[in-house]
Length: 335
Image 1 (tube, rainbow, N blue to C red):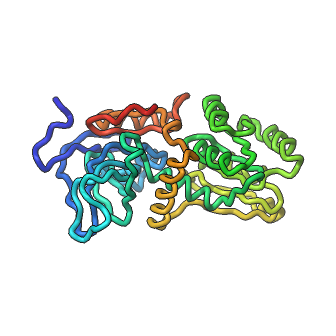
Image 2 (image 1 turned 30 degrees about the horizontal axis):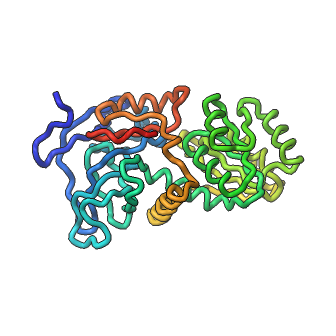
């Protein structure tokens, strides 16, 4: 049966029916309100924040809403609300929405960003790229600074590109051999193995002539790399917490934070307009050649294979960095 065949007014959408159980359903196409637009989606990025819902937690309810969890979408506007003036049918956009594992989703027009024609036929998951730009802004990286980026997944690799473009001396700290290769391709000046923290600290001291780092960006969302990140900061340095810590409480070395007088920044934004500003900045960075997101997208699947996509996201096999789900017809190749 053709998964995408449906009656007029229907679309296909992924529904998480139970932990690790994803089903493709037919459901009504959403209608935009007066202040919204509807987008015929071309694709949606996979986000690690989906993993707890995929795995199951006692506080989640199932089944979840059709398309739910998907929030890194791009596509073509196909309907606009009566009060929308800045967008029109046919515009190619990226947006902030929450039900984008589907063929259509709606979003407030104020949370939709137009994509220039030069980006046509290229995947553009705007939400995580906006996160990257917001983290960069909060980090305050300047030319000549020693900057450690702890954890080289999609987020860390993108930040490496941008920190190098700002003229920083970037020290990438990663666990997987594949991530070491990625950091080197992103032109990190130094690539260190994360597993032996004492050795990493000594190497960083050697590289920085015992000063340690002006800025350290923690990108893993895990306890031990957070501890390591604290150790790598110089006196009066800046510790930027960019990893998404979603599996419980964390302990921090408050004594060291105090002793070194660290500026500690939680780089996660919750204001939608800050996200939108970050997405607009990401578009500019891509256009100017400062950021190459396509070099970081390693896997893609059609919507009907989203269960396979989620298992890959959870397992993170060697060679995985960023995955996207594409709708029918498939997006152009990534290269």
